[in-house]
Length: 396
Ligand SMILES: Cc1ncc(COP(=O)(O)O)c(C=O)c1O
Image 1 (cartoon, rainbow, N blue to C red):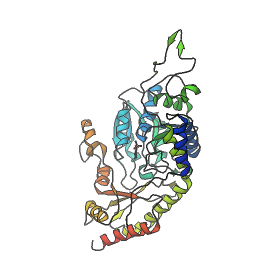
Image 2: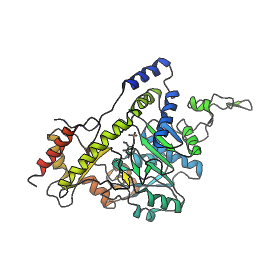
Image 3: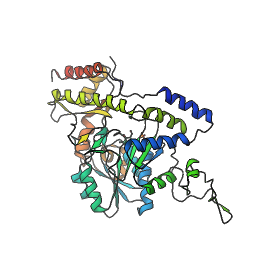
Image 4: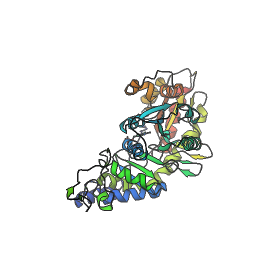
């Protein structure tokens, strides 16, 4: 049997919409992107959603919004030390400095108790990550943000379908950034989207994705960049190439939105199947708790079923890599856990952190794996995986 890591569901409707987009001659951002944004905002329950090229752009542009609200280049954004590296890259791409905080190894998320110690006069925001779909502990994070007047951007790349204390992930912070890459529940193949209740933030996001253009009227938003309305000529001067802020080139195109529009219709179905798979594995993993741990779902939350993480317990008689080799030999596709960005990703070495500074992140990075819970996995696949783990552990 083969246990695969991920899949993407492309519906007949999506295929037809892609053909429609091609036939319409309008391939760059247009009506389908607008429709996808409206549907995504309705699904999450926010006033606005702004579609972008990637989830990394979603993180970066959400942070870059802060320049319109008093932030300066080089200011600091607090992020967890352990995440997919895009989180740290996006902070730098937006022109800020990432300030890392260790995680809690059981939740894989930023440890709120360690945030206040790193706040300085230059701190402008906190970007908690809901890693593997497990909601970060948002109450204390929002409380700290409020007391220090910081903006909170949720990195919800992996958290489609998550809930925290009755609220949907993506509606708690000031903005939330999602990835729509193939590995995620709603996908446009490549893509990202930012949700927010703040229309002023959404306006800046629409400008930022299109090089920082200045006009926010409907016609120019539709034309994604080119200023075509009567504001273009001011006192006889053509302002086509006038840009209001430093921007990005990060628009979603019509074919990507077409895939997303098909995909969004399957949301409940995909979410239900993936939740079932995740809960099944979490429930059965108790059997292995002497050797391996995964996260638990608390009564106040619903984990967005992105993937199933597992970490080798301290003092186990085997290594993560021995387990990984065994899974591989048995056709089970997996990924290592991500690394501690400041101390295990060479790109961040210039910040001067030393191995050992983020022990929880480094532990999970060295001892963790994750496997898929996607919608095409059946009960047989899940039982097969559990059987392989059981077999591996039998002489340990
Ligand atoms: C936590 C996190 N943030 C950001 C991203 C970036 O998303 P993308 O690959 O769409 O750029 C990812 C990717 O999956 C992610 O896992």
